[in-house]
Length: 271
Image 1 (tube, rainbow, N blue to C red):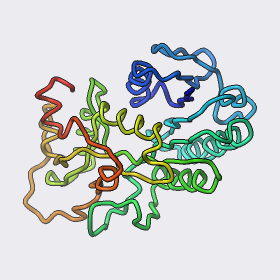
Image 2 (spheres, helix red, strand yellow; image 1 turned 180 degrees about the vertical axis):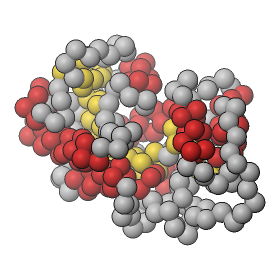
Image 3 (tube, helix red, strand yellow; image 1 turned 60 degrees about the vertical axis):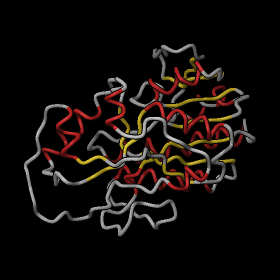
Image 4 (cartoon, helix red, strand yellow; image 1 turned 135 degrees about the vertical axis):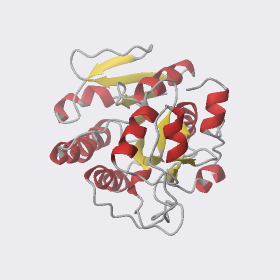
């Protein structure tokens, strides 16, 4: 098994790649010129927006884990270009040079509508308006229509291991005046890696899968963990299911989170 991983310098990639290497996976890391990878992986230079650079990266691989994405920007053109055109270019290279490979796409729970009547399910109709989730839905469709062996993993809020994500999220929620009672689904990096390894083993082939732990977490609690405080409110909570996903399909396919809640992560010093 030789696995190509994109997005290895991001919040998820820097924590996933070492775990894959430790598990004995032969990893290639797609990096731009001059970038290095810390894990014991083979760095291959390439750019998702430069199709000619992807041929050597994909030759001989058994699987692709496509993490690379752009979302922390107001540049919607860049989001669409990177997340859709970049995925399309990578798919074309895989179809031409590694057509038997499994393609695993990292997506997001942000694709589910704000006004949902239940936790987001994989078969819910989705038509998000914001550029990032909309571009992810477009990338998912490109993959499903590619003819390749595919898996889509929709991750909720990812946290842990000093990634600073909760701190950033708390500031974002305060600035956005989020209701303190709003709850979101979460996943620790350790279990995200477990889900990816299950996908590499074929457990999720041909499926879109929500991967989340066992306990949603309120915005109020998350902010308090990092010393922040949202404005208190007893007003009715609108859109109570937004960012809350149904993880039952993943469990039916063999996923069992080992970090079942943020509080367990704190108790076990996994933050």
